[in-house]
Length: 394
Image (cartoon, rainbow, N blue to C red; front, side, top):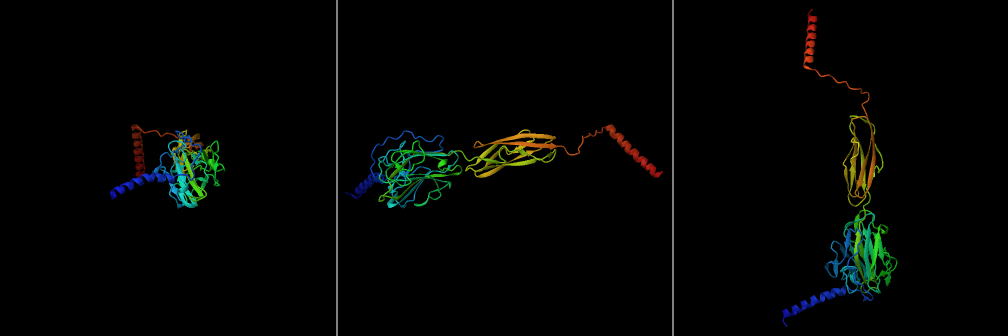
């Protein structure tokens, strides 16, 4: 056989072996048994979800794949042959759609610690935030798995090390925190994980601000496949899958004002014709994104506001100026109404009193001179001048 033919046959054999090798790497340690229901045709996401992921198609090549826009960071010590990967349908089918994302005991080698991070894109945190996802392990698994769910307000967080969590310091929940072998139970209705083991059928989890999701700012959510004593030779770690992820960012933290809404803005006494009096309103935004406060011009027109639309930067402040001036004396009352981009409502009663200049009486108009009056005045002036000269020389 020629060298070219041998090379060709070798290439074909390698090409045929690679998928099988990849599939072997992404298997479970124990063969699954029991029912394996068909996945739902359509993933059911949280209502009003701002970020969703079906995990049906992952970028990259198995056994190292990741959803587009997400971060997959295996920091196990030492590294194994797999990272996160497209779920192996021979272990179990997807919860919904065409696929899911998985991780397994091959994330490390020998008997060691698995720490494999699946991190979302940057998201906004707010009041009413909700995280939903489905997870499970292999059916009748004899090796314990564990999955941590963490939050970070660090923006571009990438996870920690095999034994640390970096800036993902907020723990939202842990599935099978005590690394119990055998299947756990699934909470119904869906909520945070219970104290049992890892469910071996698809289980939905729902986490909210009560579980620790921040109410303001921005950051990321991370799933950490964290198993001590894991790996091919370990007493723990088998195979897990995650599917149908959705996140509701919730409403941003409310914008506040100084003075507070309902607080009266009373101007000191004003003298007609003097410079306008001013008062400042300061709006504060503790949220992670900029907000807007829009005001309606108050009545009467003696009160003015500038600007009427105020952009309040994230975690910052902005001001508007209320001014008063009047051309006539009297009391003046009005209301400034404003609304914030998060639904905030502000109202500020306005009061002022204008008075005339002290001691000023009614003005008397000076009559205008016509041509006749000007001639008479001129003759009088000449006459008085001639009389004065005559007296001087007499």
